[in-house]
Image (cartoon, rainbow, N blue to C red):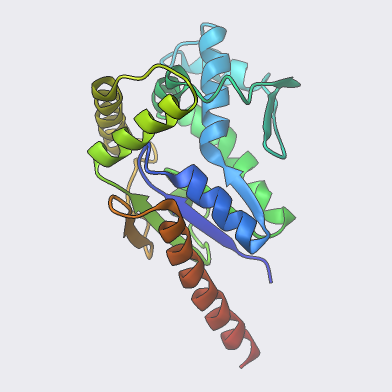
Length: 226
């Protein structure tokens, strides 16, 4: 039996690392929707296509091909995996992902991943819009301060420069943009399990999710056999 697990939540909540580890331990595919939006945002911005240019936007989107190949993200055949993991890509993704044309163009790409077996999908509307019928849904969050500290430590550990106050400002601004946008705003999906990880380790968050998933899947199997 194949199934979909969704993990929604705000920027910097640790969704990606938790989703990756959950997928690895379950032996199923991981779908990073944020990477797709960052890739699209970068290529549109580089092509000087502005978020308000609807006609030009739709024309440009029709010429963009995105392929998820393992951990790599390919745009028109070029590997942009490294380029999308930057603060700039983060901010651009927040702006372009609010454009209806962008979300429409990428919705099909995300949905079709379900055809290839069980997946753990993470993002900001995967449980509410992309996979509303997912077997198990989670809303993973943490305080803005906790998220800023994690991002700060992550960048420092990679030898990059980082400013905690600037990171906190960016996260707060991203929360505001994602929650107030008209198209697919960030919200807790119906039926999702709320998980605040402010005082949890990544391992504790993953174990919590695994336990909930196993219980839900067992329940589904029992119901199917009755």
